[in-house]
Length: 154
Image 1 (cartoon, one colour):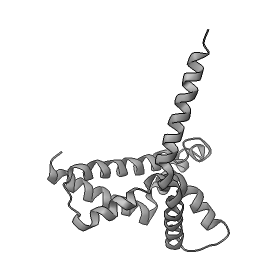
Image 2 (cartoon, rainbow, N blue to C red; image 1 turned 180 degrees about the vertical axis):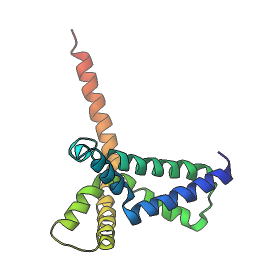
Image 3 (cartoon, one colour; image 1 turned 90 degrees about the vertical axis):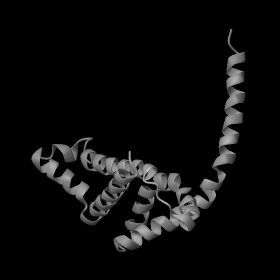
Image 4 (cartoon, helix red, strand yellow; image 1 turned 45 degrees about the vertical axis):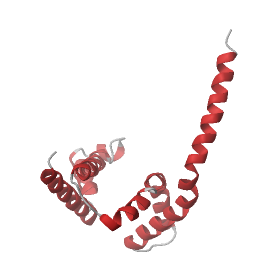
């Protein structure tokens, strides 16, 4: 993809993601589909399939475009890399933390998002920093077990 196209796609998908967040578009799409199917969508396994799929495709296109957009963040590059190191923790923890922070306390949406991000950062200090050690331990233990299983064959 050319740099110009990648930059255009990056900006458009970024704007679309902001629009999704501002309007809850993916939820509105799913709500309309539920109305059209007289409640079948809302009661089935595809309850959030269409809206979440559109959101996922938008994010995937944004990441794809960012790769080819030749964006130069200079002094922000290390900050982005640091924040990106928490992406797996954010992926795993965002829904439970959203539910936790909004279960008994009714803060505004902005406050909940901030609380989730701070919580992920704090928890990530433990989880993200341990993953290399945990991976090495698992590899050693798995290799030992696989050798043991291989040697016990008749």
